[in-house]
Amino acid sequence: MAFPRAANLQIHRSKLNIAGRDINNYHDDRWKQDTRGCVRSAMGDHLHTDAYHDSGMRRDPSRCYPGTREAALETISRWARDPESHCFWLHGPAGAGKSAIAQTFAEQCDQDNLTLGATYFFTKGSTGGPVHGTPPLFPTLAYQLVLKFPGLDEHLWGAIDADQTIFKRSLSVQLEKLIVQPFLKLGDTSPPAVVVIDGLDECDGDSIQGEIVRLIMGLERHSLPLLFLISSRPEFEIRRAFESFPSPSSARLPLDKTLHPDRDIRHFLVSEFERMYVEMGMPPVSQLPWPSTEDIEELVRKSSGHFIYAATVIRFVQEDHAHPMDRLDALLQIQSESISSSPTEGVIANSAAFQELDRLYLHILRKYRNRAELPKILRAIMYFGFHDWTAGSSDEIERVFGLTHRSIHFMLRDLHSIISVPVSGGHPLRFLHASFSDFLTDPERSQEFYFDINHFNAELACGYMRLIVAFRSPTPPGVTCWDWQYTT
Image (cartoon, rainbow, N blue to C red; front, top):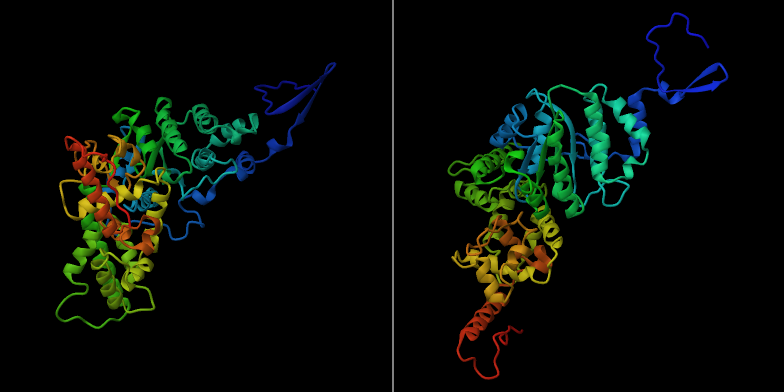
């Protein structure tokens, strides 16, 4: 085959067969297809499209209520517009509203003139992929990025074509082959795109959670046009992974009292009760507003800065089969009676009121490794907190129950989403949610974690008696410091 007067001749993806002086050109038919179509076809079984922020499978995802979380959203947007680091960690306790903020930010990127590159929203216990224990995070992100960066599909297809087992490789290899190398070959200088990863703590496997953080943090050396927003509870492996890098390597925003969550929750409750009042055609209230200011403040207090409690209250009150005023009155009465020694009809009704909240608490507690000692520790934290004592530090609880020094810090390392654990062992441990105490004192709701106040009073008394005996000199004949124990 001759090419007379040919100039700048290029042969793409062709097979050349040389037989004597003849050159035959056999074009691989698959390269006649659209490259993006090739990528889609090759990756189809390895994507978790249900994890997209706008997936149809994520019906009615949590969003920030209008007029709330504005400070957090503005902080994240400001970082995305003028980043000093490529990674932003949004963290807070269970039920604090992290997913709602991540979802709202993703949806608002266009109006904020920000490029949303990709999203991945983990759900409880999810891997979402064909390989057990390995989430299809990086293939799913890579495919979405192809849709945002022209020309990236060719380099991504090259990586897949070179190794069609890439989807069975380790997370680090997938990140390198499917994202890092294609971007380096693309050489794109576009403004950076934001990648949102929500609920990382829900990824199945603590070690995988930490590995994902370390891999993403390590991308800084490549200067890719990507920014990563990661939201999660402050679980141990995730905290340790972030803390293994210098602080300037990532921006961090804790969802704590500095963002004035009580103000946002109050606005949400008042607005929703006003809406309910109008929609249900309730009669005008001439003297006092409904609910009363005192009732609103009590609900705000119970929320402890966490929207999940307030949202659960609204869902419960507006259910169709009862009058909203009666539902709210019953709910407030139930809460006032929840610290009791035996279950009541009202307490059992409460278990139906907070099913979503209960599922969240039980999910966290049942993932805990040291199940044998956990109920005892939870009871101690609640008991000291309820009486507002300065006691209740990890040092104190360890002494009373004969635990190894500093063991509580280790044992509670996976429960920072519901328990405040000070670095110093001399400061009190406290629940992050006021509603968590109500949960523990209701046997229908807390099940195996139920807090029996009478049993614990005796258990605590035995613990202090053991201490008294241990410090007596000399010890009475035949008595050791652990002979005191509560029996029913």
